[in-house]
Length: 486
Image (cartoon, rainbow, N blue to C red; front, side):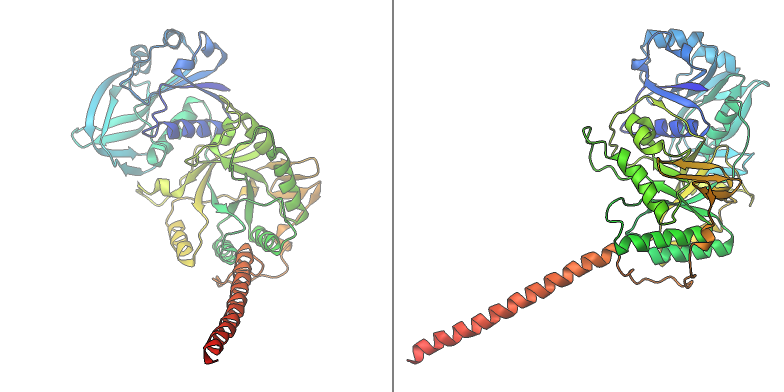
């Protein structure tokens, strides 16, 4: 299926870009090929190439002036979803609704199906349905402070759907994903995957082992989104890092290889095309087996990143974008993968109040993420929160995965891991189980040790220099005094 996502404005001062990225990731996780353009970029009859269109209004005070888009939108008969203000009158009739203006009110977003609600942090000025027809289906309700009746949030009637606003997190995201799934005529629910992000050789490796022990004992599967290195792989620091990754695998933890940080864009040197397969091959040589790739969302909106970074895996985790985006060759169309996880930080759900302790599921493959903790206190807080979340986590190896380079193939099928056709047993890769008390001491041979060693060398050199200067000072002082004794 192919969808066209059309936005009126990036709204760079607000959250417009984040909304666009959220929709792109969400649609990709539904295995929908999405093309994203602005209204100004639309050309006549462009909609005819798509199964459906989504109109995202970030600036309702700006009228749409592209006549080709307005004409084609009114004549379009495929799937139609409108998000934000200025819902066309023709679409209102197709939805069977009449709109009512809400000006600057707070309220609660309520989901009866999820037994959850979320208090709105800011005042809303939106157009909501005063009522809906019997043929329409609603997704959540809004309880405004100055209105007695609850207003529908998402509305679906046949091929047409409407959301008065979109938040890229919290209950709004959950209800939006429910509506879009039904709108796409898809079914199914998914237990989330637990993923710890920002794992690097600089992380607290003993603490990660302790974390793995605790989750293993609690029966909670998890995965790491971890970067690796492709140079100096024979250093002790790299050995310590791969030891930790093997240990995590033995404790029922999975590995998603995080794409490298982009420090600058060089169009002449396509180093990434060599770095990614080399990194995978080096890990395989150390009996570390990534089953997927994780990357910021914008990587899937860039032709070179798609080809050089993401194409090695059938499983991709798309994470929220960083503040600074380093495109190489930005494209309007995002490809799909066998499995695409939507990365959702657990912090984005903190405002949601769950009315009953149930095992809630998501409507698309979802990874609930935490940044890897650096201290025991941080981990204790995460562990406490995990015990209160209303989710049952699913192990990454219960889905099928395929990572391929010219040299190696890592495959997971029916929960069985094979590498180049031979079955592997990660639980046997670790010779001994470390103690379960997290150590705050540094790892011997780590990168931190390297810099500490440099500091010690500098101290020795400076001390020796001061010693020699002191000798010269004493000699000079004695010569000076001897001159006047004569």
